[in-house]
Image (cartoon, rainbow, N blue to C red; front, top):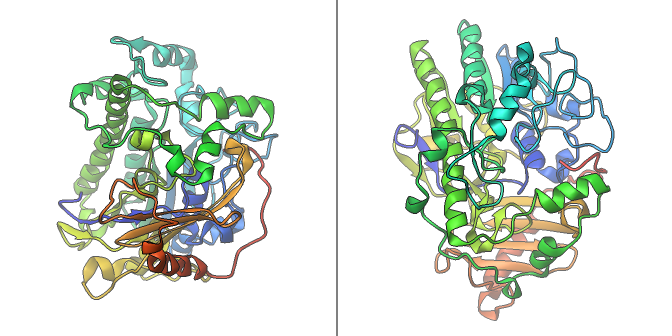
Length: 472
């Protein structure tokens, strides 16, 4: 896709975890404005329906969502009635509408640490997984750890046949959606849960990348004494949450430093998960060609956030805005997109909603923060100074409550906790590995003032802080 289209080399996420960033992609609003400022907060359905999907539906497009939505909380304190709630019995005949999408086929979460729930819990994938009583046998196969066994945490070669993996299901259902939509304009979000821990790709994908051949991060040591205070606190603090969910936070959401061999095995399996997604994206692209739609369709590949894979001694995600977590892939292809172009301006997936509307000639209903990327793609007459990210991190994750604001330019990155005033400042040109925190360095005072002014330029439309209804 990068060879065939345009790639953004400095795209960041508007938030470092799933729910806020997904809500921002949909609505074109920053997290503190649409209200989902941390995981565990449900996006208001009216706000979601006013996003790009609702605008496309009103303009006559057939809108669809296949896969993991995560606009609402799955691990809730109590049943919420949401179609994404693990504690709510679901209607087996329901296919939408949801958040502006007229037709949806969902899975509740899709991360296999929790088996696909038996009906009436779960959604479309879970019902398909348990169809004709086969679910227990498929779950037994999934839990079968094929040799050679890995010593890395949450890492194994799964015995689940690839035909039953949720990445394959999303590819299958997306192709079916295209077949049903070929007679008119459509808008489809195909959302793969992977890559995500546990690192459990099925064969042959789990063996596609050999551990001895993967690249390791250059810096793999925790050096917390050089970092802002909340780095250590978030790793060592006790989550402030109900006991059964606190256990998940402590034992599932944290992976300690792994030795080199463990890290190689973990990364190799992670890459296998990515490759299985790539395979299914390829299937979708090929089907667009078979339907004769590839030249009339804008194809966009991106994600909600990154992951640490041992960089800075970290794995998974948390309140450290290093490049491995903050920066995400973004590729546009098809429909007249320039081939082989790389855009180095800092942008955000927040900008996707306005970009989709711009390419389609559709107006969004409400004022949004999203800015179209079309001129950056098609011409050299536009530029961006910085991209912005924010996270109202609650104590439910790691026992620390911080208000994180991050700005990234082509040359620098600043992250600040607005409660304490502490921060991290990195010169990305001379220190691309983010080893030297220059926040208190007088030699960077001018850069810091400029970056702080960028943070203060955020529009003054922050919504009241919402309570969490669960964990994530």
